[in-house]
Length: 636
Image (tube, rainbow, N blue to C red; front, side, top):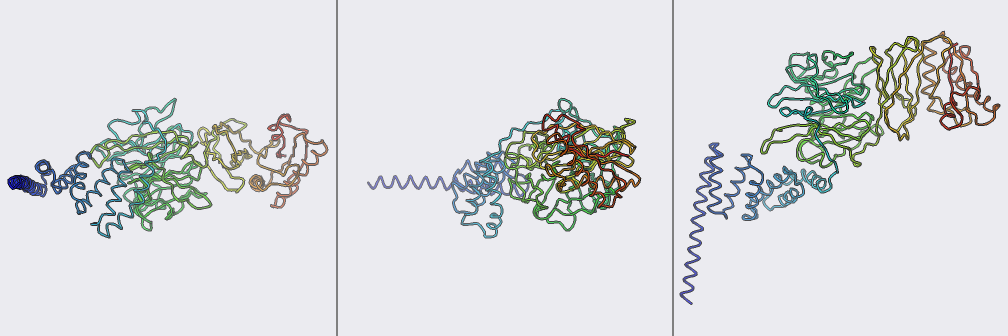
């Protein structure tokens, strides 16, 4: 028994001696490696750390230093993971274990494994060695970590695909895609790898996106033009320019160009009302080009880069920008706003709202004269990388975005491609948009004319959109948003206005509308139908939504004091001839009374009710009867 005891004692002593010898050797290797690191020889240090952990696999400090060296050297994440996992296995409750837990959380986060990242982050926050200050800082990040994990476990189902190779050039980075309202033009920024010179490119859609062309030298230069927006009609571009060769007020300013025929005008600075000595960039225009959102780091904001908005007045001048406020603008950076053609939805990126990490994409809606709390668009649209821009088409069924891809171990993107996807139900907009487009002509000469086109919400009597048709070819495009009734007007001095009604309050069909408009000069015998005057059924009592059209007729008469008209009232064939004749007369009398109350002399107007005697369509169906119930005026 005594012999056995001494054998066991000798064996244990020898084992401990061998282990101690390995540990001493491993410690020496770690010390030597640390000296190499201090001398910036990281490759040499890594070799020694690797030798140390092989010498003594139980030496936790060697694994910890090895992991940190690999991390600094941007080694593959799997190699880093094995080191820090070994630390928490060997060195419980130490500061090195605490730091390893935090590092493991970061690595899994960067790999996009958000649920595992959250587990290690919670272990880090609950570690006995954590300093109270670091715990407070960590708890601020916890909401985003929890959100990322939840979003990762409940992803939105999308299947994005990259656009064609001639859009996504191999040796270039492509980003910030935007489309015209009819989706026939796509504008985006391209930059060659290794270069800081951004240029604007445009692609046309003809059974698919065509090979893009660089916008002409009046827009692009050898310096940086980028992050552009295009108006819905495709005729106005606003972009940022960072350089010294153009008129500027600061480091980066906003500029605009308009399309005249086939040529883009020279870039012009938007002026000192918009631009300051600070940074202005990343613009987005409303559908009619009269509202401009952009980002700036000017004084008086809520964070670094904030989103601002400016409105164009009736003289065509931009008003002083206002900050969108703390609901949207966080203490950190916001960027790349995109204002949807529906006039209520604002997409933007942010580093300051709860999200997946870096810049995430958010959506806020304009409701009751306020912006709603931003909604994170979720995973996988947002992930651990930066998501910098998103474009959603007018119908709200297709999205476009630029996606950065990183070379392993690099903090700069190796490529940036433009991707597209079908918008899933979870991201459907509250209101879709459609468009009406065509040309405007003189009805006598048939020549194209430049006129003002206005879209007015007849429930609120507010102008939603205001654009000009092209003076060269008469072309126009106006966006129509779901959820309202509209009066659409084409007007210009010397002509009678044209009135069209669009009821989009409950519209199901969202096909684009082709509408050429022919305006009549103010000459005797011309008749204009007033398509936006409404009465209570079977009565001569005007509905409130008629005021837009009535005021439009009043303006015409007020601006043309010699103009005399006949107001004609018409009905369908429902009821007797006698009742319909009386009803039509009462209705035109009501219209005439309104105009007299506004100051138009009664002798300039004649009111005549025609009843059902002059139908313009069949009375055999509801649509025809609706067209026959109308008020019109004829120039006398």
